[in-house]
Length: 179
Image (cartoon, rainbow, N blue to C red; front, top):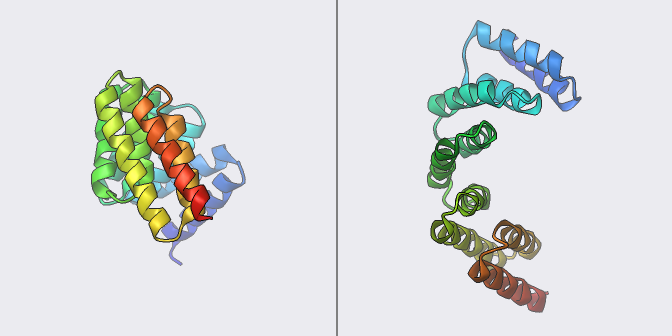
């Protein structure tokens, strides 16, 4: 393992152990030795945990621009932008994550929730229904418990959207019958 990778590994361990200041220091040192998407992303996560959404958004945007194929970078960027009050930027970041991971539910849930909160219920409903379709595909593939958990999360995401509530309840009923 090279010095950079070793430093990132140590920082991750500090991060996992809750030593955020130590992790931040090591991530910053790693970035000073060579900017990588991974180090920018991880430092962004620490800064979000410490309440610095603005600086976190800057670093997460760097990570997403450097390695745009990683949907998790875009989701976390959306979270940081949302936390710093930049709704349009958060919507764009979540939409990019949906584009990068069209068969994963988390980006669709994040985008759907935000669209509903931003008073765009039609768009939010459409995105949450896509997440429900993903849940149905997972159930059909045998991942029934995962699909049920996803259906519950979708129902929680759109409490004011009757069509989403009914579709989630219907899926849960079908999953209960399948067990």
